[in-house]
Length: 383
Image 1 (cartoon, rainbow, N blue to C red):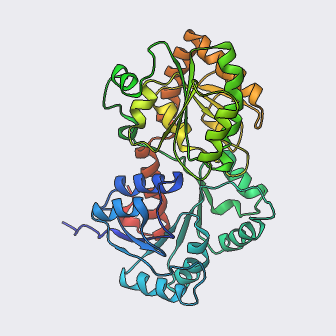
Image 2 (spheres, rainbow, N blue to C red; image 1 turned 90 degrees about the horizontal axis):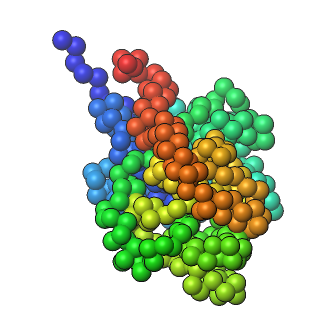
Image 3 (spheres, helix red, strand yellow; image 1 turned 90 degrees about the vertical axis):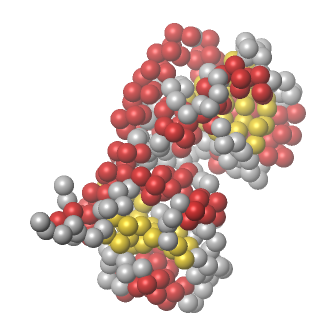
């Protein structure tokens, strides 16, 4: 009997791992990956962050603080040393710019293949134009680029000028356990003091400018006038919380809007939600984790038509898409779903069916495993 081949030693280089979408997708990938095929080790330029600490506690080997400041003359050298110490056969990146700037030269010097999981869609502006140009140049030194959707691949080729032969599509996936309810809807409503007859709209996103919560708050002015029992739950926290709370007061939404902050029981929130609303601007959105989570739970989504959301939110089938920056259109679409129980039930069934096939963690992980095995040229590990 031939000896079992050793797993591929893969170094995952990141700046830090906060609880943002790309970082959460990476966490689920690493926790699901077949460790007999691929042995991931972590390299942090800064501190591990909340998601990084979670992975370390689960037994992932890691080094950190290789470049605490954004600019470091020794970062590439330190990364190279870490790659040598981890005896790395492959370098895995998730589009963090400083990791690309310092990590790609280090990986090239070690003569190992490099994958970049590109979970971002940037529109050029005065602030990010230089960053986008840097990423574009660095991508030419990467062996494989993972796009998050078919449209995302087309965007990277057409607008960022990246070589088509390097770009593969793997949809972001989530695990159903992250959105599993831990109590009955009645208990959740009672805990949050939500009336039984309330029509619940939820927003599940960090409170930052590109998520444009203020557009949904403006839409709620229309919605509450048509559906007095409507209630908006804003789940998440961030830099815009004070501004958004002031906007809610300005619009007279004290009885129609609740700010719940960060929560770990997203499954419980989704279980009492009639529809999820996404009001994002077309700057950074690719495929939002809140849309995937909502559809996975069978909750219809009303979203602005940004990024590549139209690949998971199928118009009139799993949800409704509206133009960005249009509170009135967002309100009309939300009202349509809230008023039509039959449509909502139909969308719920189709949402689960569609997203389970497209954005499942297991499916995502198996595709990543095959890309990693192919790139590392370990023929004996191929199935």
